[in-house]
Structures are given as structure tokens and as C-alpha cells.
Image 1 (cartoon, rainbow, N blue to C red):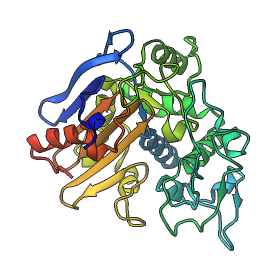
Image 2 (image 1 turned 45 degrees about the horizontal axis):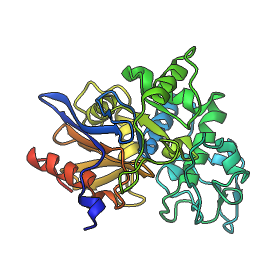
Image 3 (image 1 turned 30 degrees about the vertical axis):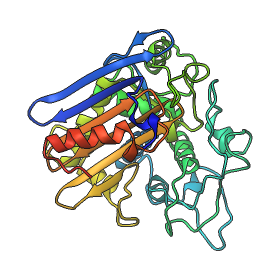
Image 4 (image 1 turned 180 degrees about the vertical axis):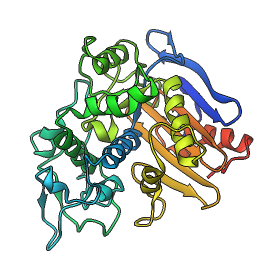
Length: 349
């Protein structure tokens, strides 16, 4: 195991959702190693690809109201070229499970210190974030390929169906129902305090943790941003990530009191029939009797993982503002998640 994998992170937040005791948040370390600013439960952190779980929640909520059709050809909403011979366009159900026939080319979706480019420009091939246009190169529904570009198509489909910016839809469908004030998809732009979502972004921009490299040095510009709001641009505080995870656990377990998803939406999210272990926006691990629903993110400066254990009614999240240099199973994130779940007798997979 590398030195960076065992060294204490610059800052770490742990969240435990317990069906008896509620949500407990613990933080240690610094939000910024350069200034010495401490990390707190109210410090926004980059959850990176955990944005995909939130994007799936948004799509499922809109589909439940008939705003979106999970099984329609996404080309009804988003023009995208299909180069796979004889193939139709992907559905949102396909894209959310990384089965849309869209593969990320080498060198795509590298982060930058400034605001990330608009997703429409990324899909059109007008930015360095994705060389060339996003295309469907394999028959949808025939295989798994983890794809940020596929989630860019999801994002544009939401905008086309609602007539609103994706970030505003996320605020309306997820942040507002749960009372989250410092949670948003954020591409590095300044916030506008005159609007509810803009106020959330302004709070994040003013107080978010800095990202750090494996050696503990701060990333250029304090924080780096990735193209694709639906793919990798979720920011939240440890406290509010706990609120989000707690609600999802209630929804997934069917115990009552969940706000975001009803039983039909949960079934669609956790359905992994097409690719074992891959739901919509989440990974479904464990056994049928003791499932573990997981979403995670790893970027230049941050790493995190959120796990829900529906059979137990509990959940665990661990967030660090440092790239550990190794994947979650080998890093302090994965080790801490496993330890916290194991202490409570939950499935530690």
C-alpha cells in the first residue's frame, strides 16, 4: 500500500445514518492545508461522481410525473449521432445504467481550475473536455461502459424536457424538498444570491473546502471542476450529505418517511437486471437479502463514498478533501466505510 494511501488525509468527514439514533457527523482536519482553515460539518465538499445518483433521482422524479419517458429514444430530446450499425438511440434507462452505447475517449473530462464548459458545448465537441462530438458507438443496452458523456446526454434531456437549466431542476427536485441550503451541482461559476439555487452556489463558492493532491499540496486554484453537471459536479456539506443519504435510505428500505422517491422509482433505480450490480446512478452490491446501495466519487482533490443498507435502515458516508492516489477500496475512504458498517453489523461489502 502506498504512503499516500495510509497517510491521514488533510480533512475527513464521516456520516452515519442509524435507524435509531439518526444522523451523526464527525469531521477532522483542515478544509485548506495552506490557510489552516478547519473542516466543519458545514463545509461544502466535492462529491464528484456521486452527482450521478442525484441525476438519477431527478430523472426518476420527472418520469413519475410524465415529464420524461425512461424508455423513449433520447434523440427525441437530444440530437446525438448513432454510429453503431442498425442501432437505435439510447434510452434514459440505458444511459443512467451506463448501457447507452456511449464510451468516454481517452483524455476526456480532465478537470480545470476555471468554470467548466457548458455541457451542450461538450456534447457538440466544441471543448477540450471531449475530443469530437459525443456519439453512440455501440448498440444501446448490450453492454456496460462507465460514461460521463452518457450523463451529459441525460443532463441535456432534462433541460429539453423541462425548459430549465439542469442545475435549477436539481435544486427544485432534490435540494428544496430536503431543505438543503448548501448543496448544488456547481461548475465553478459565481453564485447569484438573488435566486435560491444561486444563493446555494454563492455559499459553496465562498466556503467550500480546497482540494488537495496525494502529497497534501493544494490543487491549483483551490478547487478543480469537471465538465458535465450530471456526471461529476455535486457539492454538499457533510451535514447535508447525511440528510440526503438518510432520505435515500428511507426510500430504498420502504420504511416510510422518504421524500424523494416512491416505490416505483426505487424499483427502477435499484433494478440491475441489465448488468448485475449496476442500477440507475448507483451500484447495487451485497445480496438480495442484505443489499448495499453505493455511489461514490473520485476527482483531483477529493474522494468520497456513500453507502446505504436498506435491510438495516442505515447508511455510511466518508468524504475527504484530498485525492488519496488510490481507489476507494484501497484508501482511507473505503477502509473507514467498511469499519463503520462492520461495527454496526451491516453488510461490509
